[in-house]
Image (cartoon, rainbow, N blue to C red; front, side, top):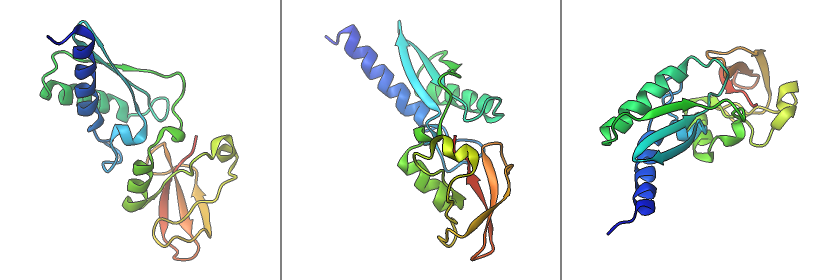
Length: 167
């Protein structure tokens, strides 16, 4: 006989695995687990609740992500899952997985520098071009194609590229 605790652990893992496969609608090569947006999955009386944290307050992708999580969980056999947005502590690029950083680079977006912390807020960072690998780069605009990215250009290959901002 499987006890209540073991059953909840198994349900939680199944729900986590289903939710972790949801992709970011703005950067479809990344899952919400890669981004660190997937914060927690809990089981209470057989009911599933997923906690997510936006990369930016007011991120327009969060509503779509919540819907996609609900769909993924329902497909995995969970009835009426709940998705909750958690704003504190605020999301940080330190929560992004190494695999997620690699996927960004392969997709042509310069990943955030691991451990940049608050220095990044003051422009004290070196961004590597995802096309040619040069560090001779410059900021074109602090505002890129989405609120979590900035537009940069490589001085070596002259190509513009998005940079996933640190924070």
